[in-house]
Length: 577
Image (cartoon, rainbow, N blue to C red; front, side, top):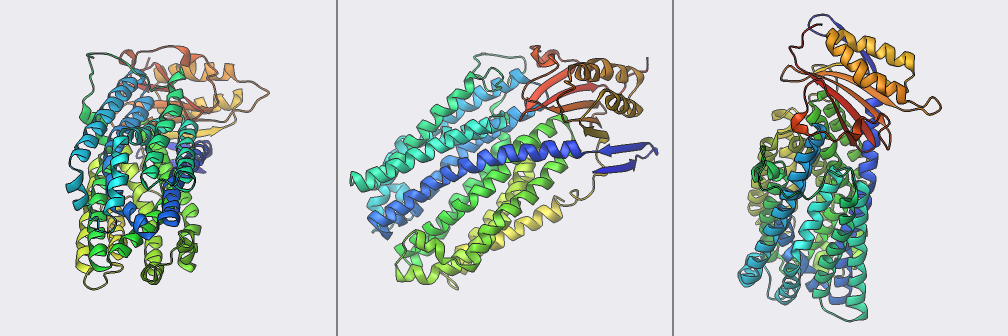
């Protein structure tokens, strides 16, 4: 897109952001594709758990999955605090060129995650009887739930580390390895399910063992990432540091997602209570089917929304408002496009989901079609809200995201209990739909999340251009960028950024790049050169710079998703020479 704008002083700003859009689009494809494949296998595993248990052990055993599902969500809190929080911090550190800080953040996040998961697992095993009571286990499915839960808790630390590790790998430019670990985890889990239930004739415990052993195998795959010399994720052992990291700083970006899982725990518990009281074990079976519907939708929702975090966090590290808007816009368009076919199929023929689970219970067959239709529509609102939450979490606006979860959780729990006497079969599902609509209204009207998607005005961007450069084109870009730089700044950009880049270009190979000049909120200016290449072509990234010694006017090099970045920051009060 080419546009001509004027600033408050009437200065002409010529913008061509086609290359920048292409970088984001390619970045999304590179993140969404492995993420979706990983989610397919990661979410397919619990689906296979449910299908195999339903076929082999019956509806009562299937209902045990709904009973124990809050335990997964509770442990997810630890995973997202350490994994998402640490991963976003790593991406921000990458955007700011602070590689050693990223390594310290990774070390502390992983250690905290593992210790917290082990302590919580031990406490749950000690108090398993009160826990099963709180989970609304019925007299019929209590034995199945206990058998499954004891095995699961024994190895839950592996599940948590795998969950957290996937976030970290995506934020450290290795989505393909995150995909490989997810696939390995899912395949191992499914093989153990089938062999354990149908060949060895074991009980429901074997599906729990498949989940935790599959997660262990996924972690083994993730460890290959540490062999990458360009990895920001490295274990460092420094007892003290001049800029030591606090635990709060590491986990804070993950608090919105953690709050979401905490609220889900109470939502599921309230829904299970209403369903078990009014429909009994069949009601919990309905809940298990709906949870599997959500697992299918999550393949798209998580794949799209998680790609927001590394991209938005990197642009936020640059303080690049224009790039942030492009990330948010592309996420919404791609997410709705990918999710809509699933929603449409469930609205037209919800029975296909019931056929997959061989449902023959008369009560479930009568109630489930309406429930499935309600929750399929709900997923569209969940998608948009999740994108906004992940965006806010990536740009230091965790409080706004936290408020959205409180609103959604309170409304859903209250409505579930209030509607129980009027529509006991579908109270949790109507409550979920209404609460997500209210949250979307909060994002739109209170947080103005849609207000800055349309136009690219009122950003801190002075100038942006891009394309497949030749010497004459680079010279033209340099002259235009010079309109917003002092003589000293322009000379530094030419000598340290543009000249090394143009000298390294291969005339026989086209290389897409972009050049951006932005004014940061602190008054400083940044000039950013981005180009798509698997390896650094200028040699500037070979220098092992200490981020604490980086001064204004020096080149900061980083790599993000095969997009190389060379950035120079200038003080706002730089004097003419």
